[in-house]
Image (tube, rainbow, N blue to C red; front, top):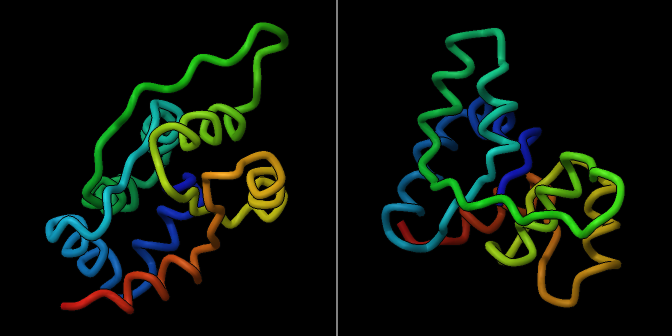
Length: 124
């Protein structure tokens, strides 16, 4: 799962959207997102940037309902959903990566650089 802050990095890195999409098409990667990311992308003011981000292949999965109590942050909803729908959460939010690493035995927390290394290591 890509945190919203990673979508900008994907589209601004030359050729990376195409490489990521080829990895998705080949079945090496499954990019999932929640309504949270969809809503944040929809609010991007720049139509060209929004269009570039929407070219990233992926699918939307149901957002996990939070446990009872105060309504969680968007980051918490993304992390809860990633826990059941993804193998890794890619985010540039260091605090979120640390929280995921501390709270989950299953979900990996990656930086964008880690995603780039993973995609670069895949066969063409």
